[in-house]
Image (cartoon, rainbow, N blue to C red; front, side, top):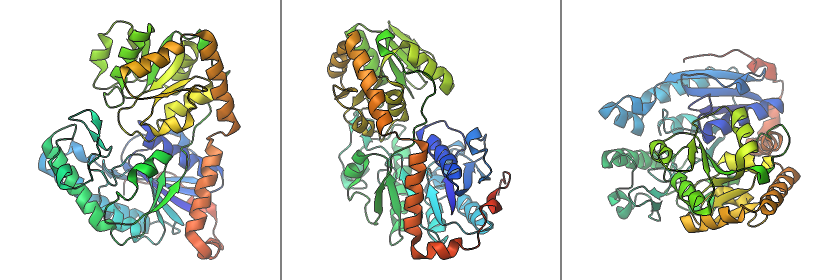
Length: 424
């Protein structure tokens, strides 16, 4: 089997990139030949250093770095992305059995969808957010700091000043969504949801085009080392981008109300505000090994109190695997993996509910019991890289259908064992 994975980056700066990289590695370890196409030039994660992974770099710019009218036009339809991607696919020594897209809004634009649909292989898109339906991608009113219930591209949606940047930026995103609907209409598309909440939220909101829905958990690499002992931790920890929509400010306020310090690992727009608060430590981005060493020694719980419908922050799953209780927003897809009162708490993203959960965790017995149960439940049904790769392989084989065996006849996966190629 040969699979093309298309993403905009080859280094993990966020959850979508991390899943794309992990998927490529897991598939390669399972014996699948992988061509990893990277849209934007940049470094590559060591995860891609595998004999069955071939990397191609398209060398495209980040659309929003172009500035002004050029950025707006490329965001709606990036013709260069279409041409370079078509050339890369045409140059493959063997046609892929499936193409899996993880990101497309930073460099690729709707222009790549016709290329992907016409490549002669089933197209799968993992929905790490809701950009396939919602103009700002997250069903969130940044002007009101609350989730959005408007129908995408309805009159009310067009009038809403919901974009985190500006109305002009919203107009570009609206145009992009309208173009995407047009190019997808009548084309087969398979979408992968990483949580049940994503499927429920989208429902029939895809607007004008049909999609076949699939459900596959994101992979979680088990952190090596002994389990955490959250009863020894002194702080409520938050890992990720420091933004209001992700609830970073709520963690600071609720931890203070519960009489606990707050530890922030990450960076973002709220960094200066958080640093100025008493009882708060902000240590910026850290290497994964350093993060988990810090959490094992300091975290009484990991908090993920998103105000928006976050699909599935990986830090939640990683904390559960390590034996750290999680306090998750009931709007987050990750809450599906938290058992309220058993492995953590699922609460509304507000100061009072969060403070109540944090206060309960001040009890050593509570923190230790929830942490041990979190680890036991996770390891009983692990979201491992191997299980993720097996689910993907099963999906790809099913989509390839009865011609799959014929297409595989005589193929040699080592044909894809080649060094990096690019830019195209």
